[in-house]
Length: 242
Image (cartoon, rainbow, N blue to C red; front, side, top):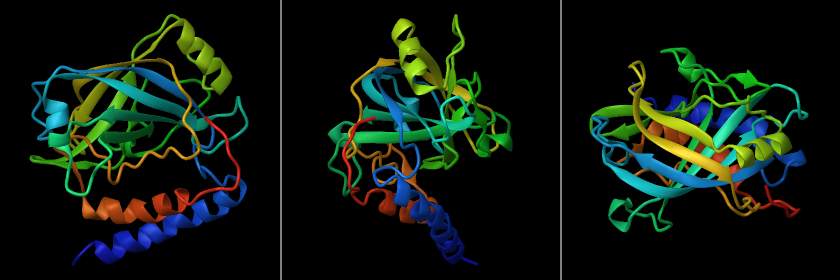
């Protein structure tokens, strides 16, 4: 039995909350407020994921955005998000792509074989995983990506104004990992981030089109995410930056 009808139905169901949130947050239904970050992403190479971007050595400038998913009042627990934007060389672009970037979306989750698929709420930035939840398709099968913050001298707050001040005083360093859906995490790189240029309301992360070199999205993951992402990209009425 094909999974197409099921994933399409679930994708339509997932769109419903976005319709409601967009009435109050016309530009970004979720992750409406965030902190722009700039830094460097270094890949050590030598992996066997089957995705070139993970398995090959490289160093790239990276833009990033730290955000709170549900937009609860500052100080309340929330699902925390980290979006990474990395350049992709022309030779790594897939057919139909012309923007030259990879957008990787991560959110706080558990680190275990099952809990890595469960979002988690936090008042402070945890030491555990920021996970991709949805797998990429590599030459060797499905691949998840995660970022694990390195230890800091002081706890990193999730309140956005305090977060920005903290990373200005001490850069935010995270280890980058990959895994098969139920396999162990394997480190493949490091990203170091500090305060950067804010993202405008017209700047969108698109993980469906902008994938890392050598990776693809599964059709079922595309069907699950596309209705919500299409709605989120509809222009809002106000302007701002975050």
